[in-house]
Image (cartoon, rainbow, N blue to C red; front, side, top):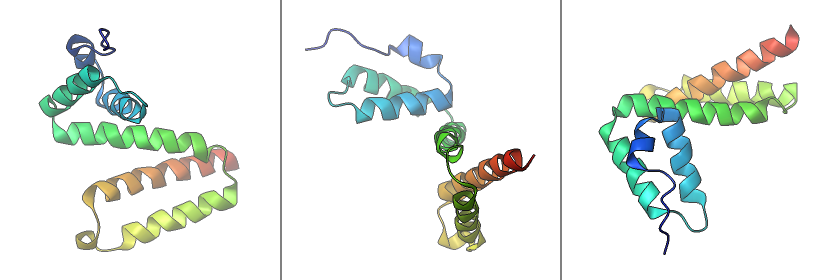
Length: 119
């Protein structure tokens, strides 16, 4: 039995939406997750504006992908641009709104990385 709770409600309230998502995924991926911390984070997520939380979630995903994009070859980055553009070219009715926002943010990040390499 764990007596120690890694994230208290007071500590979780100070987290940004991005950090809240990152901590939640970290806790979920642990072998023995701290259930009190997970409950505190889930409670805080429920209290926040869903649109703001979604933006924080997208920001965290893009940042995680950027770490990998920096190491990729230029050819692979061009393929990722094509992949994201193809998805965004589909009608909105056929795609998930969250996935569209994520792919658009990823596309911008990859284009910034390519422009950084060419300059």
